[in-house]
Length: 66
Image (cartoon, rainbow, N blue to C red; front, side, top):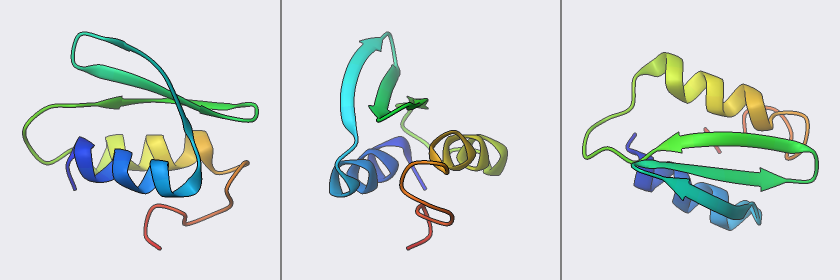
C-alpha cells in the first residue's frame, strides 16, 4: 500500500489534513495524530502498522484493512 492509498482511506474516514513537510503529511482526527510518508513506492509493513496504531483509538481497530 502506498502513501496515496493510505491518504485516500483517511479522507474517507474524515481525518483532517493538517500540514506537510517535504514528503511527509500530518493527519489528525480528534486527539489522534499520525504522519504518512508520500514516497512513490510501497510503504513498509512496520510503517503501515505504526500509522494504524496511531489512529486506532479514534476510528477503531483495523480501520486500515476495511
